[in-house]
Length: 252
Length: 252
Image (cartoon, rainbow over all chains, first blue to last red; front, side, top):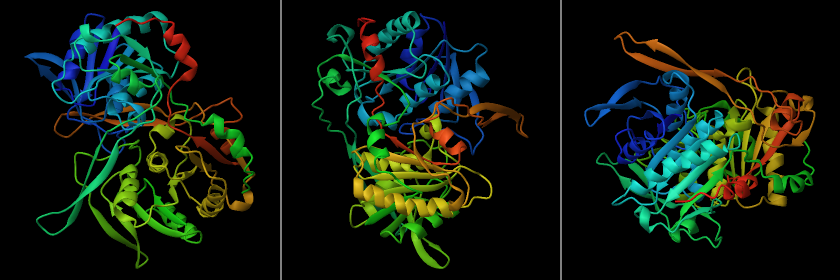
């Protein structure tokens, strides 16, 4: 199995190192990841600048390709310019911080897997729901198991698996739930400041205090100590609203 | 009606000027738009750099606020830092180039409206399906009409209208179709080059030769000379696949 790995925390992050080490037991791993942190880039691609790719070592050995682009750029580069064979699987992660609810729209981690899915390759995004004292071992081990399930059962074209794990050792996991995306997002605001030259600038900041009554959601699976596996797809059409919108009888 | 306007072609683009001029007949317009072109940024937000905002003139008069961020940043800034009243409507555009099919995921224009919808405000993205000799008049006039429909009928929370127009004068439009997102996307590849210092770099390039047999799609409405109006929403869950995925009986 040929596996392409990316992330949005950058090629030197701990999470991608744990992921690559684990998945190299399941197949031939190629890492193509951003040369620096690219969180919150959404599904951005780089069309106005050239992309640079350099080889990156870790622990004194060749680890992968560091690219001057976004996770979506990295997946395109991996498939279309770097790998000799088309990958059988794209895995993006392990992200530091969960990717839940509407936050998946902002997520570079998910966008790496999205690009894989749009290019017709089974894809997984995997995130650990913490920013402090991460233990990547359970997520890394689960990525290998899930790769096996995906290989056996296949995914529908254009659908990826968005996986989130609570930050506990494997033995403490309650199990797995197939979930739907919750309707939660960051609550953000701007911190307005003045620079030493007298000019105004703004820092975006915020918090994430999600609530979701839906017991089947990604959020509530995590809260209950389960791994959350959400199948996501990219036909955004609001089919439930189509008939009502037709009844507006809009004219040109 | 308080209207917040943004785009991804930048505050000095022709399309946003035409849009703001038209919508100022429908309400109080506030323009907050990127200070330069920000196409293909997806739903990126700026969290690692401060955001600058400066006043921008056009034709010798104050036109709006130019921000050093993405369209999603601009909408957040407009609502949370610049406008005194919460807007009743967010309109993003008029984009040079259609935003159809899976390309909406890459679209800065759509992401401006997405941010509005996620913040609970009725939102519209509006794009003109051409890159050459654009005639914005029909799209600008239609934005005013559509703002009236949205005000009258309301949109479901979290749903926006993604509007695409063929590049023809208003009199040549065949009418309007409520459509679904097509399953089309760019076909892209990399142009590998060597710089004057002997280093490799890549340009992403591609073409868009879409096909879609689905007569109800955004693409086919445009092709037939109609305005396409697609309601889109951001619960990405693949509900059709949930039961099958549960039958995989994944274990931790």
